[in-house]
Length: 283
Ligand code: TA6
Image (cartoon, rainbow, N blue to C red; front, top):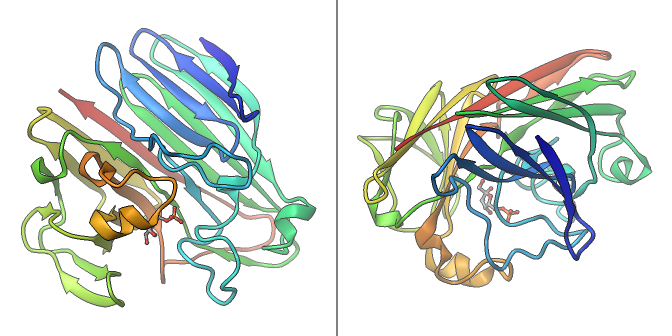
C-alpha cells in the first residue's frame, strides 16, 4: 500500500507498506527517510534537528547526491553534493506484488537546475520495499552534448552506538582519506570509528555494517557504484552543523554507495545508466 502525508513545511512524504516492512520517501529530494522491517527498529537515521525546509537538504535518510559528489569542482558557491536533494521530485508510477511495494520518482531539468548544470536530463529513482530495501537510480542524458557525473546514495544508518559498530568488507582496500586533505591509504581489518571519518573506499561490491549491541547487521550490495564512502562527523563537526544534534554522531554512520571523485560516469547524448543499491537487514 502507498499513502501520502504532508508535513507542516509542505513536504509530501509517501509511506510504502506491506507485510515485510514500511518505508517513507520524501518527494522533496527524492529521499528515503525510513525503512523499518516488520516488528524491527528503523534502519535509517534522520537527525532530530533536520530542518525539513525547502531550500535546505534533509539531514539524514538517503540523500541522492547528483550530478556531482562533494563540492562542485570549480564553483565554490554551488551546492555540495549537487542539487537534486533540494529538488522537488514527482511520483510517476507504483506497483505492488507479494514480495514488494515499489514507487518510481522522477525529476528532470528545469530553469532552476540549469543555473547549476546547463544540461537536459531525466533522473529516476525506483524504491522497492520488501524484506530488503532496493534503490535504483537511472540517469538519462537528454542533452545534445555528452555529460559527466559523479553521484552517491548518501545513506545514513541508525546504530546503537558508534563504539560498537564496524564496517566489514574493506580489509586490504585502498581508500582516500578526506580528513585534513586527501591522502591515499590502505585499510587493514574492519573499519572502526574513533574520530572524524570521511573516506572513499575504492572498490568492493558489498560491505556489512555490523552493530554488535543491537545484534543487527546490514549488508549493503551495489551495482554501478564503484566506491563506498564512510562518514562520521564526530565531535567538532557535529557541533558545527545546525541541523544535527551535538551527540548524534554516536547513533549514526553513513555508508554510501557512490561513483565519486575520479570515478566519473560519461554519458553520450541520449545514453542512460542505471545504478543499484540493496540494503539487506538481519537481526
Ligand atoms: O559523504 C561524506 C561527505 O561528503 C562529508 O565530507 C560531509 O561533509 C558529508 O558528506 C555531509 O555533507 P552535507 O553537505 O550533507 O553537510
